[in-house]
Length: 309
Image 1 (cartoon, rainbow, N blue to C red):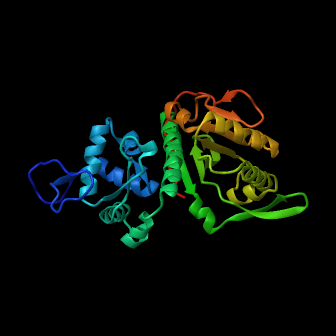
Image 2 (cartoon, rainbow, N blue to C red):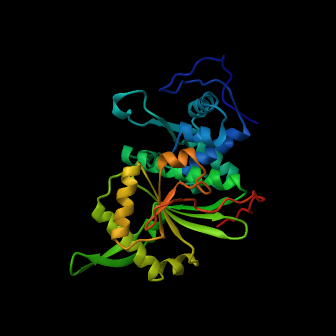
Image 3 (cartoon, helix red, strand yellow):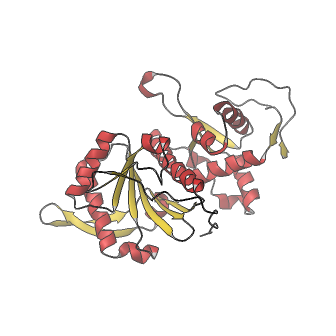
């Protein structure tokens, strides 16, 4: 354990502000993993941290409170929904956390890429990104259950910096240039093979017209060979996770209207939270009516070797 902080008598820490002299904290290996996860995911709700590392909410909240007081993480609050209850606590990397990440990874702190301004993001971004992390955590834990490994997770920021483009039909006679920017690209190492996914999270803010355009863009990208040229594989499924069954049905129908088929898979946040994201039949495929699993159930295998890309 690493010993950080100043010795103080144990006391209840305030919920909404830091104290000048926080109680002594012994930084455990789990604390270090929490800070590294906050860095890797950029934003995490308290319940997401618990799901990854802790057996109970109280234990998670206590450690997160200490990490916040000692400036390893920053804390923000999501707005209260529908005027009821308390806003969700979310955690982002703090300056001291950036120092710890640099120490653990053997790099200069500048290479961590931490900036205070990076944490000053709006509520819409936070809600979308936290939903994306729900999908990431669901896939990661489902993979771990059967000895697989989510070895690659690349988010839209990287695609915006170097986007591929395709042309799609716009109106009756026009063509429009569209950038291919999925919310995330994910590779699951299954030991003897790899499964490749684009991930889209939908909070019911996109119109049917814009969704159909996105589907046509993905079809042009895959059928035209752009995807294979960039990723050196033909393996791909596009996973869309949305907010409700009604919205899922609307997206699936719009996908089918745009010519999309078995490339496009759909599920909801609730299903991912309550079932195995890989081996439970929680997905609907465009053009099909039955609920489907991403893969057939198979016996657990030894963990796949981690690949650094």
